[in-house]
Image 1 (tube, rainbow, N blue to C red):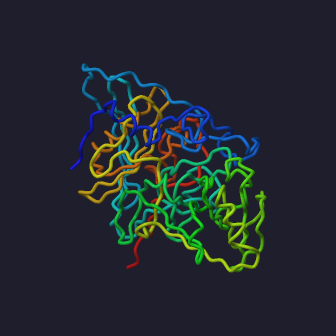
Image 2 (cartoon, one colour):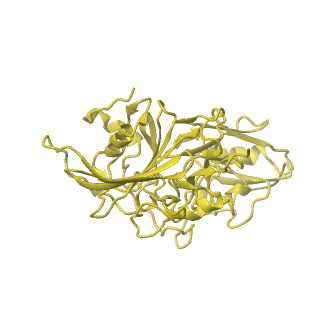
Length: 423
């Protein structure tokens, strides 16, 4: 059963935990500035400067507009201009305009039946975790028929997604032990779901070494990050948020430690894998993994899903609306699951224009519930919000209107592929 919650002052603490602005100057402040433009991956800014890694609305730095307050005279919402077509077997696209006292929005919905023979939902990226590209290009690389942008990412720096990503073919590409694990996934039995997916990782025979990150844009303070060839080229002190003291880099090749030093490498190819430690963990790496030590590492996600991709927090979870922010308007992207039908819902709401004002988080959650979602998670929004699919003529096109006026370069996407079954 889907339940609507009334906002109250008692939910302020939940708002902070869910990604509301932190204190100014905090390197994890979602409201703080994020230097650089879309598509950059670390040039033009000293890695010593802390940067925002937990944006509330978008990976970009453009602030959202404040929504006018709701009133008791709030008129009934009107809907107009509805159009729809079949993108592929099991995939339907629908667009409509919805207007209320706050103004109009234009919504774009992909309704997917994952039980359709030949249809799959997958994680998509351009190869290395750090590589960014337009959504259309990312989906083309997977030969997808449709999809939307995915997780928030470290825009203007490493380019890496902030949370987790697992590809059906390439396996688990990046993840965090905790803190950014609210995810959409296809489970081991092929069923869609939304839940918290913690990562478990370890260095075999060295249980004292706390592995907190896999191919993440930063290593948790006091933790250890694993960086594999999937990451791309090394990013230096960006992965320690500019911290240069009490850090350690261990290089493992052919199952043995070949280097253990207090300096982090920059722009180097990774063979084998790296371990990067911060704080006390840097000292543990120094003492426990001298050159020549045999080392193996393992990592996995809870439940071993076939694919997974994270957003910043739940909109709807266990049938209850979890969103609390009803102030900031922005373009939005969300993914939801209808438990009754088994359908997956991919939604993009345009914003920052006269045609479409954008949505608050509460409005986004409300719409997902109205569409039938029992579970939903917020994906990257703002200028990142992009939906791609086959148009009525069968050509692949951008179906919404990205607020930047062009496709922002992003880190990953939710991809829908279709291959006609044989026979």
